[in-house]
Length: 225
Image (cartoon, rainbow, N blue to C red):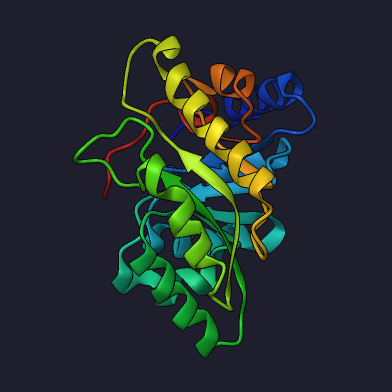
């Protein structure tokens, strides 16, 4: 378990360095609720989880004093629980997933904001919608009554050099701006989620309004139990 005082210090310094328009999502990634509570004490208001079962554990301990974002790949068979747990799903990577979310939200009379995940690196084995297909998918999603598109999310191909991410963040920002200018009814380009611990500075330079940071707050990711 990471040192509580170090988490508080890292979180405080990170929050102080961010522009006011940027939201920090603390990516829990198997860190304990106690570690996340230290970050919350330091000012974190949004917690990101990669797995539904981990989010349930976190909500049970940390509670609803913070908002929760789904930042990992969401399986369709987990949507029922995800709709109940998360305030925002950042990883809608297909029309089919959007439909399932809409159906579940309709069943519980709930409307859920989502971000559309963009495969900005055109990677065959990576989740996300290709940039050239994004507008068509977003226009279809506006017809869903219980899902609200509020922006885009991307990761980009993994690299040890933060600068390597810049072109992929820029591609996604250009798409974000295009969709915003299209003024699609029922669609709001409010959030642009890009950048993690090793790339968030570049992401902010390229227009990110949400960053997903884990290691820079909590230290190395622990093994999954």
